[in-house]
Amino acid sequence: METKNISRVALGAFLITAGIGHLTFARKEFQAQVPEWVPLDKDDTVVYSGIAEIALGTAVIVTPKKYRNTMGKIVAGFFAAVLPGNIAQYKNRRDSFGLNTDNQRFARLFMQAPLIAWALKSTDE
Image (cartoon, rainbow, N blue to C red; front, side, top):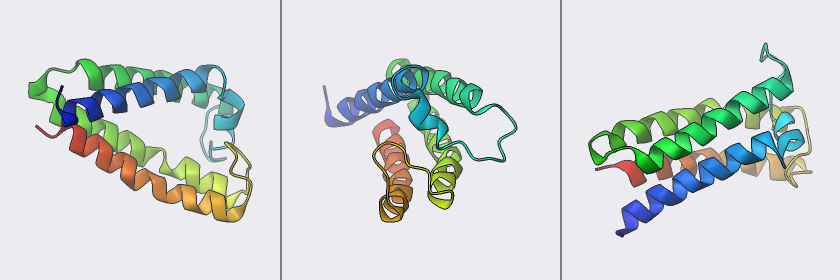
């Protein structure tokens, strides 16, 4: 399997694992990232985003080569869409995932760019 395919499958596995975490072992942690302005219950938001991550992860793995580029753009858009949650965690000083200082929460904001790049590069055909 070529490096790009390994990266794409790893991205899918990462998303599926994160989605499972939303629904199970990290549910409370993810709630700390839901901005106050989201009109849904925090737990509902976490559950819905977990389902979306599982679906996106599965799609990244199984999408035919012809559509992978489009799928990568969708996943990159998803990563961009969750950035406000990371900003809310920083702004509201919510501890979660071991991020219990302002500096750690601030540094986390810069992780979205590599995730977006991963989605785009691993699906670029």
